[in-house]
Picture 1: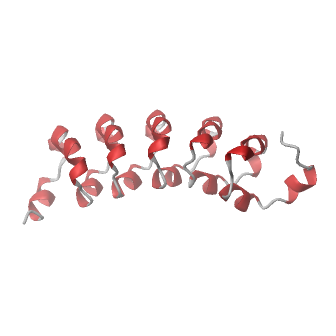
Picture 2 (picture 1 turned 180 degrees about the vertical axis):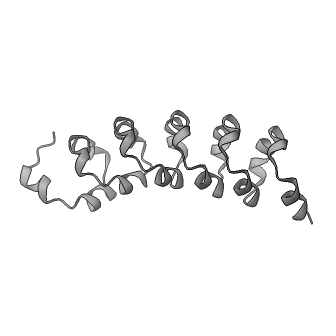
Picture 3 (picture 1 turned 180 degrees about the horizontal axis):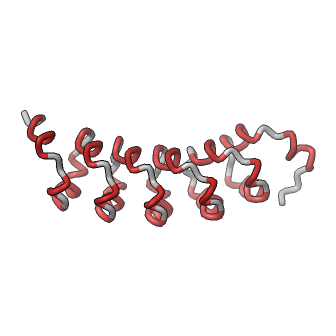
Length: 142
């Protein structure tokens, strides 16, 4: 554990501490998982946090993770795709998400993808045309 006094550990504002955590704090975070604000931690997308997340899957808030997902979390997202809040990922699809979407077509919220369709999602629509809501697509064609 980091050389930090027990009194400080007990007095620390854990929510603020979690929100402002940095890589050098990882040993302290791992030493006190019961005190952590997991909602705040799940909004962060630092690659160094993945080892903490892997050790505490039951504590994670998947909605927050999905809402704040970043490309550097891709291995974690792929490994735990069953837990993701797909509606969050589909609200703002990014190009780096395409492999995740292609590998898990039944997990997606297709209506959300269509509402927010972007040219970069075309390969997904091309591979899975039966999933498209053609009425919605045709209604919006100029």
